[in-house]
Length: 248
Image 1 (cartoon, rainbow, N blue to C red):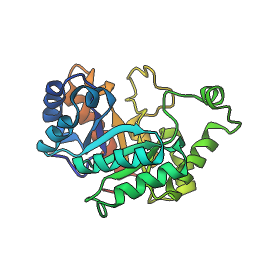
Image 2: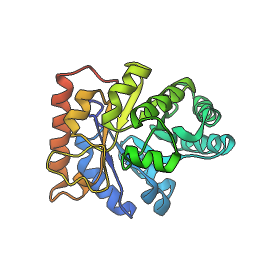
Image 3: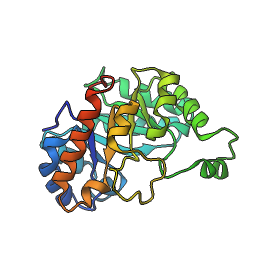
């Protein structure tokens, strides 16, 4: 069962449903939810979502929809039908696409009858130089994230996925009731791998994150359950000394 007071979402970035279910069962006592991303969903499809829900776990379906508004609306409606807790779209898809996503989700009624919809701002694997090279923007990375977050809120979405380094900027732009889910989180001694804009789980919560998403530092740990327990406890300790996050 999902632990509603936990702030930890584990990324089940594994190739098979059998591996995902084994991890989910063992980690469940420490989790707010599981994240099913492109790897597992491409391999196993909707049955991965059904399997996690059968275990009593909430599902963050991380497929980062980015297409024309009608196509994204259809994808969000399909995800709503799966009973997922949270889904995301790319914030850079534009206002019409974001509004279509929000409207498609809203047809299920208010949360928890419908999924929370988040806009992905800038991937945590990118740095400011990457942003300028890829998109030709003259904004700083922080400015760009603020612009995207405002557009996400204006379109009626519930929050954003963003690096912990931009949380304060997002709170300034969008307020305390705007959901912020933070990947790019690494325990102090963990390898950053391909992540760039990172903080520890406790630092992310103290900065104002509602939930942190952690994958490899748990999945690759000698004892994944112990790794998840430590991260969940670090988040709880940080939360006790900071603002009270939302509990969707």
